[in-house]
Length: 254
Length: 342
Image 1 (cartoon, rainbow over the protein chains, first blue to last red):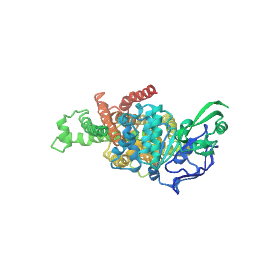
Image 2 (tube, chains in turn red, orange; image 1 turned 120 degrees about the vertical axis):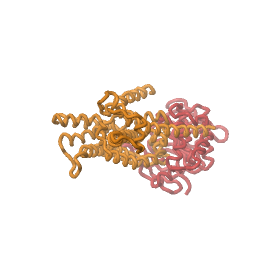
Image 3 (tube, helix red, strand yellow; image 1 turned 30 degrees about the vertical axis):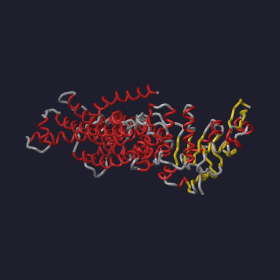
Image 4 (cartoon, rainbow over the protein chains, first blue to last red; image 1 turned 90 degrees about the vertical axis):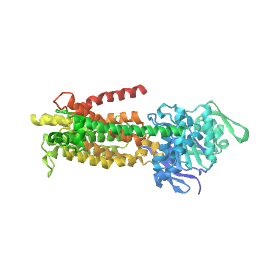
């Protein structure tokens, strides 16, 4: 059983239910899955549950092994998380912070410094290596948090709004990097608000609505004008492009 | 190339830490040289190394001044280490034993011995004040953790409880001060100003033991503490068991702070200023930050101890007064700088 399985997951904040018995089709290695849906649909919360950062009921398993029962250090080697934003207050330099991401869980790791530097080079931010985190722009910090997420070479990569602070060139570069990371056999799950971008980069879109699964599948089957009107309340056109890809254009509210 | 620069930076930091260690040694020598009867450097060093000196010099260095100087050094080290670790695990730059009510609770404990005469049975009389202060300080930190656990909600809640605890202890202390006799009141006020004058070799040994027991665990957690600077969730996703890290760190910090405060009374702001100076010098990689904090605290306390003997010739000022006067500007500077950044 290879892949990430999410079964009957429920989660509430106080009395307010956020996820209601959510079951998804298995997420498979090599695929980029985008979690989409309107505000408060439970996208980020689901991501936090998979990362074991929020307590939930139900079962989330990787290759048949329950993630909730896994020792935290082993889990850290299997799952990388890129949060929406890094806290701004640290004066650690970028390279230090990525080395810490590598060594905090596993104790001594020989070659950690070189490994961290290689990740910065791979993401094209090697020039930032000696810059303090609190002097970076929001977009630069986002790239650094991606570096922290992938430096342990995880099998699963979870990303919350990874492009929210990036300019267009960096968005394209980051999404390209995600595709490459997936192609190496990883399971990539990202929350994305921009549906046009999701349509272009995702292998599969999981559309959440009020804490439940609304629909899932290839972008062309999920992102239809009818469905966008029902879930988001917008008038949209969906155009077919080359290579079976689609693009989404929003005209206005219903 | 950049990796080379990173390693260079680490070497520079290691050198800085070594320099600070040397300065701390100089600080203790300076502390030994000052006093009502000034000792020249050569005599001080001869007495320290066990060479032939006058009997009076021998007594002054070994029995009068060295316990005081050693206790000053250790108290500074202990308070600064607790401040540094508290600031990291509570994710707040203003956290330290003093601001979270540990010192105020210790003072309340001392007051129960001085004013009410409540003492633990089977304890020599000279230790009764310290013992009560220690128990109250430790109790305060235990209460803090318990309340934090019951309420949930992370470090902000702990900070708020700490501030509430500070005020509560101060309020009860006022009550005891009000009912105290004139003699007891004088003794109590003197205790709350923090003083090294009651230093003894037993006290030095006790604090040295606690410090030696805690430090290896602090340094072993250096990478985990560094990771926590990226926030709780990030640290968790790196594989850090944040709850356990917080619990153990606060236990170490409690022991250190309670021991230090119970021996010398209320010493403000060393736990705050030490870590902040260290952070400016060596950054936030805790492999360097923790030793640098320890050494800065030790040096600051040595200098404060020296100053307390020099400001008014012939009078030994309470060392807590001196550290507060040095520390307060640092405190304000931190608040103002924080404002400017936002």
